[in-house]
Image (tube, rainbow, N blue to C red; front, side, top):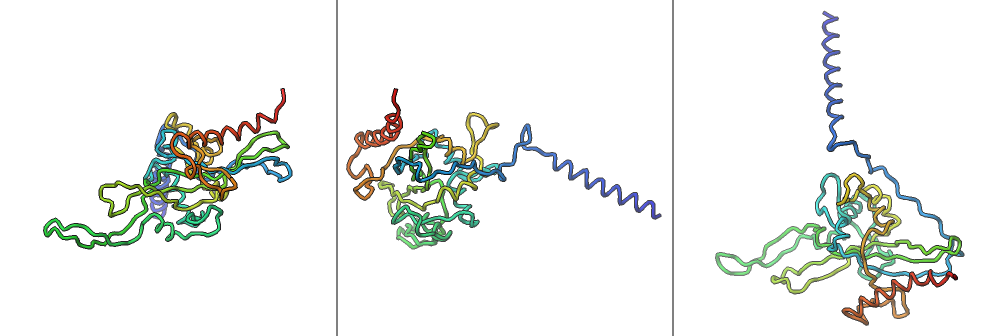
Length: 284
């Protein structure tokens, strides 16, 4: 009797192991992909102040509606473990892995924001709006619960510093901060005639690199070679234009003194000036 019981217990145990092995062998694809959640960001070389002979801070805009930048915008909802850039930041702030900084007054990372303040910046708060009653035709108050709509982020602002390192004789760039820009219409703007653009929060880029290195970016050309957000920014795999540079006029933006085609040419002039500095140092 005892032997029968031991045999039965062994069969049950082996069946459980077999089921676990079968479940463990389930692969969502043709091959086993590397788990990027434990990946660390690429170390950046140390820069001594004495080696920097020239530097300039610039602010640039990445428009997420442009085709090359769409890997930052999609997916707007989590899909196959992937999040877009803004949702990744929001989840990081919610989980305490990232610190958001107030973007209303400056871009110097002075005032931290809580997750509730971030939700408020997205308009994700309970509020009351006026809606028309289809039966009576009267405008009546209706309470609605707000939610964070990451799809409203149509642009990303980068704050970065370009510098020339005389030790290596190279022109380099370091991203300092990232700021999502929200585009939306007010509730009373029924015809959506006036778009509102607001800076939601600033993220200190060096702090965010560890999280960015652990999140995958969809590669539309080859899904076997997906990159991470850290790779995307380090390799400058995006299109952008310069919004402003450090200047004596309170760091005014280009739009404050030029518009239209002239503003685009000024943006290009600033960018060319940065690269021309390096070229002008060489003698042939």
